[in-house]
Image (cartoon, rainbow, N blue to C red; front, side, top):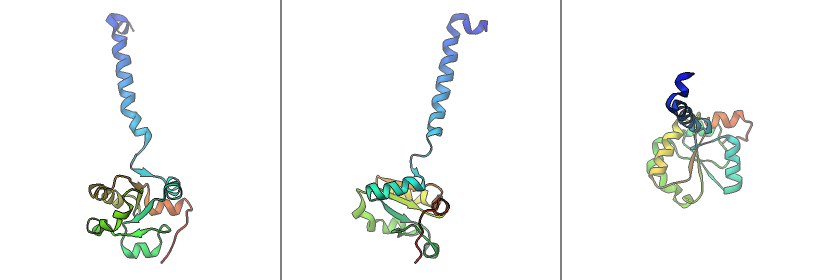
Length: 136
């Protein structure tokens, strides 16, 4: 205790605590590039977001988000021009668990899309949240 009171050492302690806390704030906020299924529904309803499913055609046919467009991950760079007419609208990128869609998110940003988000947990989280599923 005496160490803290000497020569304003308590200020250093306060500074260390505050700077440490500031390092954890971004972790508490979560991933700004990801949206929950509920947030995705709001984006679609309020801002007419476009859903891009990057799973392969078999996975897509087994079940997908309503009105989703299927562009498999391995074709995203060559087919991103199909989405150019939606460049001002938010894009929600979906895969099975959220891993492949992160790669697609990066490719779409590189192609000039600024409002791109990943569905956190992917199609599995969407289904588990009880959201509607289309089958084709």
